[in-house]
Length: 212
Image 1 (tube, rainbow, N blue to C red):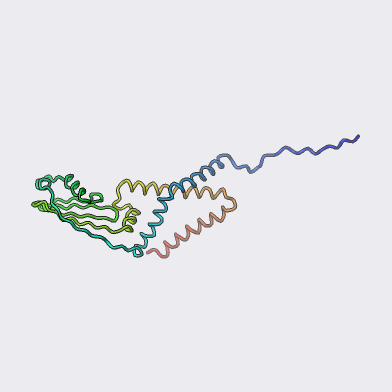
Image 2: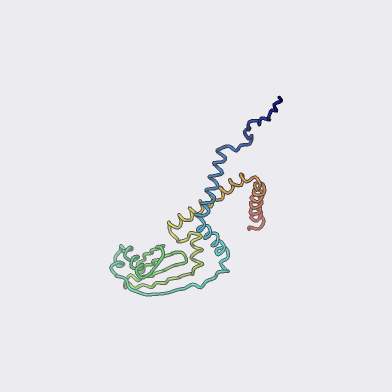
């Protein structure tokens, strides 16, 4: 009786090119950061991208300034003495509807000058120290001026300044996580890096050739 020997399959060999665990972890973390940071920061990144256009082409979005003037009288005891009651003066002006942050408080012998500034907004007040009468001029420069000032962080306060810093950090993390991910896409790695290099060279070329 002849018994045929069945071929015995060789034990599976480990793949020589198995990706190390730390690389897989780095890819997973980068993908997670790229997706969720992009979603979490979408609103603020979109805002700064869109306002980059309005800021770079202000002539496309011209708006008329609205100037309003008003008069009134302060309590003379706040301003008659050598030590002007600045807090009371400022709070009174705010109670009349003045916006923005206090930017200047000038004290002269006969007159006070109090100025407020905010995004797309200014208010200037001149107060007669003898009579307590004041003239207030408010200038509102429209929506485009407001968002342009917010883009630049001008007269927008410390809280908005923090928003700008956080959004800049988010842009850095989103960009770097995307750069890390491209190295794990073997079919797109070369074309992606070429696109990166071309973009960088184009920006450098424009700066060198056309920027005064």
